[in-house]
Image 1 (tube, rainbow, N blue to C red):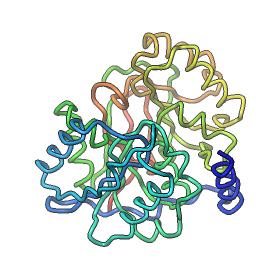
Image 2 (image 1 turned 30 degrees about the vertical axis):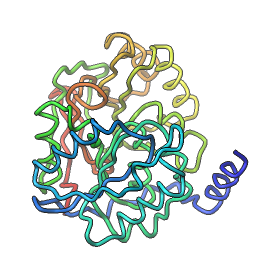
Image 3 (image 1 turned 90 degrees about the vertical axis):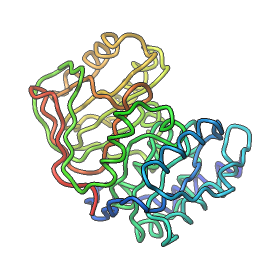
Image 4 (image 1 turned 45 degrees about the vertical axis):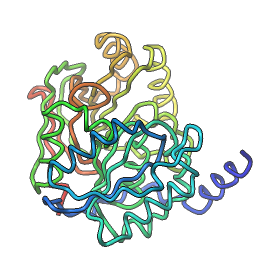
Length: 322
């Protein structure tokens, strides 16, 4: 354990960046059928049958896949040692034969490899990188440390059992250089208004766990979307309170809520958000199909977006792919 703490401290010492947000200048290339996707496992081990089902979906979409033997390793609740998982990400970004990268699953463990990631190496090779849940911290790393657009979307193990809409939108977003608009299918306006800013999206638990670390995201002027799964209402309250007390959301431009399944009722979650963040004087819209349950739309993180609660939608200001 001491060695892990030492690595974290050394990583923090070596990799603290300026608080100023870097513009997204590294746009991945749009994928085309026949491209090769590399699969990484930056967090937990995965169920093999769910993984194989996801692989079939990707192959049906026309992608070739590179599945390194390293991703099948397991070290307790981790998919292998920290260095192995970080090195595989470096290899996939650096390999010219790999056109895009998708994570096998989330779970736990991505935070542990943050100090081991080489932003200078990664930013030289912008590629589509997709994942969600625990992968939230890697998406934020790519946006803030590599000035690279990243994609909050299904992992291999969730793609196989995903509904047709999730699969279809995943393929369309990653293969088209287009402006993306998403609607809140069950939109509930918590606070009306409009806002624009760089888009951040991810798991509330992970965002709260990054507070106080050098990898905590800078939400100033941003439009943030959060989602979570299996957290009791008091825990949702606790995490939002932590973000508020830490000053992380004081200068947020706008807030959107994705799926909060098994977190109490939607009304409970929305009331907690209203109680804790309603005085920020920002637009807040709930009801987007993003997250752990049901439709999980693929969205570009780091790209400027416009949130309009009256229209019940978000529209990205530019393509996320070159």
